[in-house]
Length: 96
Image 1 (tube, rainbow, N blue to C red):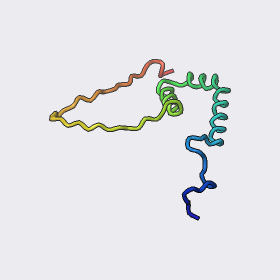
Image 2 (image 1 turned 45 degrees about the horizontal axis):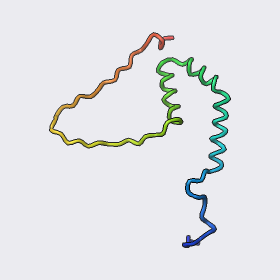
Image 3 (image 1 turned 45 degrees about the vertical axis):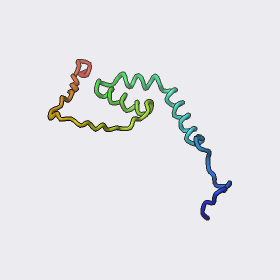
């Protein structure tokens, strides 16, 4: 049977309403993290520099909203561009 205008039986959830299963999973995960926050902090503290940085970057995906990539088109007569260089240095802490 195809959808007909005015159908009141198959309307589904209202726009913006929360899926109860998803809400329950989020709450259970939040409780799990809250109960293990000290252990999680100790585990992160025990990591070395690069490993700790990578772990924190992975965790940010669950805290900060994901940004979409955007592109910018620039018309110019320049033939050369300066590209900034980011250099990471190893610290004595990383050898621990």
